[in-house]
Image (cartoon, rainbow, N blue to C red; front, side):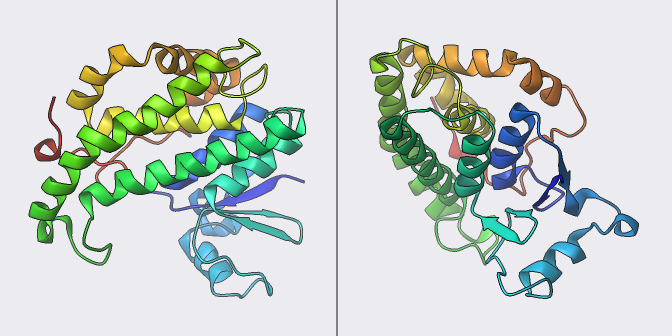
Length: 243
């Protein structure tokens, strides 16, 4: 039976993280909210699940994955589940646990990137918090981005397997998460990411490697891959970017 993935159909957002893992693993899934209502899809079907109309395990918000009577929410947890089930996770216990930590840290970075353009609250329009966003963006560009990227670079450099992956001897869901995050950061902060790029060669090589993986490459070239826009997590506002 195919997995059912639920996420907003108009943005890549956090849903793109488990979606990439599902695609890279080559497992069948339905992107439910993007399906027509005649096939049981649409936003209404997703909202009904959140409202508890499909059982006693309602998720707080998308993304969430349904596998029979199992409901798994949070992008990182879904990615971990799918990766560990379908050959996209390290085999040793210590490395498997570390891969989970990487995925959760990536989720922290994604949350910080979102809060750059919405530092005062998600209930406010961006236009209502531009001054605060400018201040948050300065700290994010100057301090937080180098701190996060430096951590990933050290992990890649120090991987004893010498595989070029974050953990273990092969690409895992942790690498896919960093790949998506780098794509989002390059969209949102193209000027800053260009100036930072020379300092993180291992990350650059990993991003290229992930993009070249056959299943990932096929997905990226398909209409299933959504483009970034100013309604999602990663938004490009020129006034928040700088060298």
